[in-house]
Image (spheres, rainbow, N blue to C red):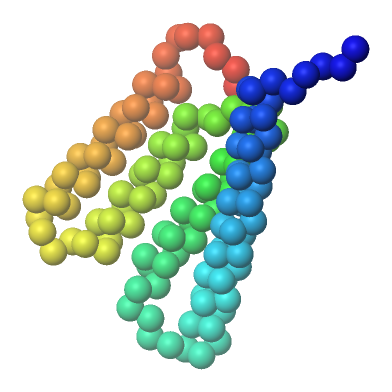
Length: 131
């Protein structure tokens, strides 16, 4: 007897293919950033936005790491990776847009909340798998 194709399996296949395509695109963007860093270094350019480009590089890297972790851990996204990405993204926002002190304060509070969330996730006595 043949096992009919189920809707969850179709959705899982669609999700997996989409994540693989996203990972390929992120790898291309990551290589583009590496090329940019090489050009800035070799040509001794005075790049004003180098720090925000470095943080963008780390965002690409974190997303790729999260996708790899998803496939390694049997289709599971660890919550801590989302927190890492959120902290990096908020830090990048502070570096890019630091003209308004109120928005900078709000971004810093968001980072503090993310760090507290990470602390709570790691130090609660609930049983959970180690990642």
